[in-house]
Image (cartoon, rainbow, N blue to C red):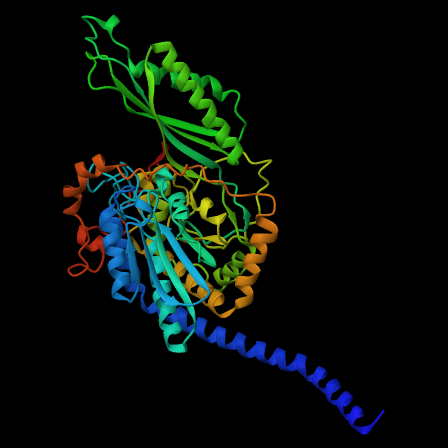
Length: 542
């Protein structure tokens, strides 16, 4: 071997020995840079704590129901436009849906959270017993007033860093419209909102931090209304000349009650009669029943829906009425969440930690729990484990969330943040008590910190985005193909809740939060924090 060949071999050996060390040094530098920028993001979110409080309180004061979130959407998009986002309104045929974008290039990271309220859940914040601001009005009895504060403040903190450091990437912000009716997200998917998105992070209020990967355990769902048409007649003078649409509704409901015995243990179904006629002395010409059908997967829900359609036909035959309309109102797939992104988010949860609750926060929490007869455990003090996949074969069912539809179209996680109180029943006035108090504010700030850290991980670690898609393609979707419940001809039910909001909106408007005059919504309402009942006295006087 010649001298030049020996020199080449020696150089190659030297290069091979140095290359791993060089790459390792580069990786360490990148990790240090990421850590430094994340530390800066934590401070940036903390400096925006006042903005978090204002957004949480403002949206709480709107208390709007699904498909009627006009004030909420106007307010939130105004903040985003003021901060350089380009906003598209009326997305997917829903007037209150919007998409806000900032930045350019890849990766494209979407942040979403629901914005709708709950009927009849209007409640004074910070008051640990039933005390509505406006009796029977809607309110935020699940806490959907807080998630957009988490997302917006995290996005603004990260945007500042991206601008200064010339970090490529795009932020996409979107709202969950009419989540309580499961009526929005499938239409966003159909409209292509997530076609260019690399990762989607969804936020939802909870009483602790939490994130999971794999099958979520939530049920899939179809929400549908069945309207029957009969013929009017005088209910006393000539009832034999009428055909009662209400009779058909009641027979369908009774048929479904007999069906329950033969459903799988995981199945859930519920209904309300939304139109039973006009007055008792007129045989009802029109009547409508609204069902939710829940099962573990697409096939199970579709089987329930098909069975209900046959029952509707039978009820019509028995009464002489006709099935006028079967309308799909909403739908949801059972969610499947992304493992690589969930693991990174969980590390960030541990880094941020739970808020520092004070005595007033704990006193309110225990006062609520005492009022409800729940365990007086106060507020969360320990973070739980990273959640893993639920074996759906053993699942006993439960609720539904249309984030599931998005999760089958793009790598997605749900980040739960600690803005509410343990022991509340959900979809209830008591779930709104904490939602415009320091408990909600502190929890949303903590959530925004985790969100900001995770955003920087995604923007500065291309391997994480690649791993997310590897999991999505090679594990999540190898045996499952997303098929929407909604048909190409279905349209969003934008009329939902319009009558309720028309009844209450003007009175509710008098109680909208005015941050130019009051530092908090509690101050505006004149509520001493916390306001709770004293501990009940036992029979023996103790």
